[in-house]
Image (cartoon, rainbow, N blue to C red; front, side):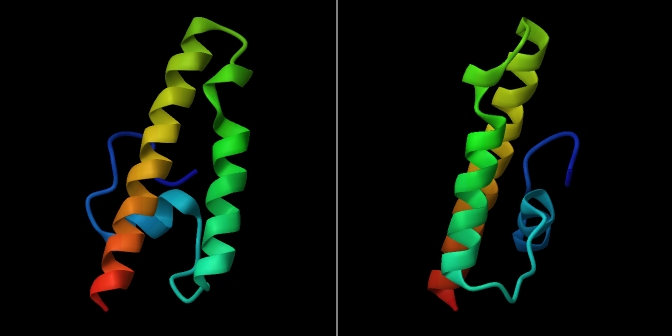
Length: 75
């Protein structure tokens, strides 16, 4: 799903991480981000390795959302 390593660095990578269309409304994007956060929450981890992977995925999701929000405010 999206980038496998590292955090998104720009708007294009942010949309890729979220699996979102850049034309999606803020409302749709927020629902998507909320769903991804629920799905990838570290509390759902089945092992330490899974927890670490989920924490990294949550970081990617959060950075992607921040980048998208930042870019939309500038637009």
